[in-house]
Amino acid sequence: MKLESNGILIDIKPFGERDIVARVFTSDFGVLSGMIRWAQSAKRNKPLIGQFGNVIWGARLDSQLGSFHWEAEKNLAAPLMLTRKGLEYMNSAFALISVLVPEREQYKQLYSNTLELLINLTSNNQNDAYTAWEVSLLQELGYALNLTACSGCGTRENLEYLSPRTGRAVCKKCAEPYKDKLYKLPLNLFITRKFLESACFVQGVELPYARNILN
Ligand SMILES: [Zn+2]
Image (cartoon, rainbow, N blue to C red; front, side, top):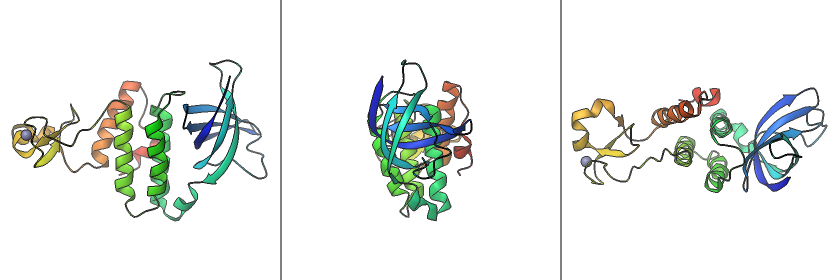
């Protein structure tokens, strides 16, 4: 079995003395894991987290951990080195994908949103860009947040709260009797974190450390 696509290198772990086990978020096949042989001892073209490139993934059996041929085209993380925060957001996004997105399932929209995030993290609105990315991740995981109208009365005005149960907005008036059970809008990383925790709980995984340290 052989798969070829564009992708982003999102995770690297040393394996033995020479090899690494990597995860690549690909355009066509979603998340793939596999070995990159000799990557630790490579003198040049070392695989780095945040690289965008071309990947050929191969395995003898469908279920086997495959191996990668990785051809980096550019390092999308390089411009983020200038700001600590940019890298923190990138690492958090990659860790969330690694933990929550099932392997070998295509996620075209999330993939393009992730590429867009890496570009937007070089701008001044890092927090907004990252929050929007988490909302798109939550949507893919079945936790679509709907902020367009009140879930109680349908109005599009005074949407001041969000229901933790439904993920839908609630207007000021409808929220009145049970305000203390709702999240106060605008959307922020505290709120998205609550939904991510639910997603992690359902999948039986921990919220990744890189996400835990964001605030
Ligand atoms: Zn309402």
